Length: 310
Image: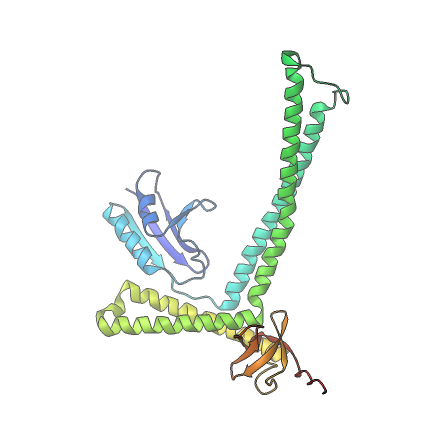
């Protein structure tokens, strides 16, 4: 039987280490509880568990199932929550590593495409230009050589196309990362996280209200970890918004300086204000309904168009 250790840290996430061997049944048990094989690490682990609250229920249930199967299992779970700035820096470093890998992959594919193209040319370089292919068995070698040359050239073109996609993938990754840091996106994320926090608080209160003994249960401890994570992420995003407000990126417009009929620039379009509220602004859509946005979405303002002279 195997000796297994299940660990969770903010930096590495949830991982499984031990002297397991293929066919001993540990893999099936771990998969049943949400673990997956990480080929790059050569270990089982829970996907997307870095800098996330530990899934204590899954970890403990997996440990119990492994013990029932006769294995020796130890569990070491850290409930530490890293500050948002550190988390974002770690994510950025991982993204840069992936972009570097994509750059290297593109360069490798370009070399392969060039080599294939040269190989395709070399296959038929000794053939006189326009030489006809003899019919039947006599021209079989000639036909095979031409087919291999064409197949290699096609493979070269496909490889070059794949290499050409690498810069676009890297640029898309950078755009997506920048998008998540935009003040309006951060503001929407704060609202979503605050709603999640309120929902989690209700679940925790309901759990202890109906089952007081559940305060020491695995589920409640998992909720506590999730709550600590949410509180830290909300605080980090609010700090980003405060910096944006101080720099004037957001917070310039509100119901104090935007009135009905004004034009506001939202998501790349100028829209006319129907109603200015305390936290949101309602704008026309060109249809019978209006759209509502938070003030952080307003990038610019123009006064209401002058009424035409009669």
